[in-house]
Image (cartoon, rainbow, N blue to C red):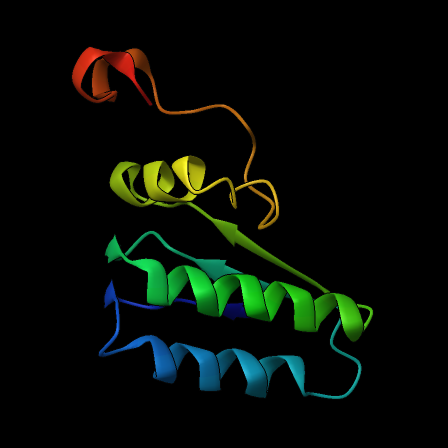
Amino acid sequence: MTLRPVGEIDLATADALDAALADALGRPGITEVVVDLADVGFLDSSGIRVLVGAAAAARRAAATLRVVDPQPVVARVLRITAVGGLLGLSPGGPPAAVRGFRGLD
């Protein structure tokens, strides 16, 4: 199953994503939930909390949760908070041309 949130995942919207993930993970026979972040332009700690919590819930249910296709700013947040690997992102970052100031990504 794939979920495709749109816009910002922050304090105002995290509960809706949490509910959608709980619903997806609660379905009988679910083995994987993919969260496609292509249309998410902002992710704060509330969104990270929801994604990490859902990944833990997936493991308890013998399923996997992974995120795919994050925009560069969202991928950077996941990398610098060290949760990208937990959520199935490859360790590689964006090309050097889109890295932040001084390459401190």
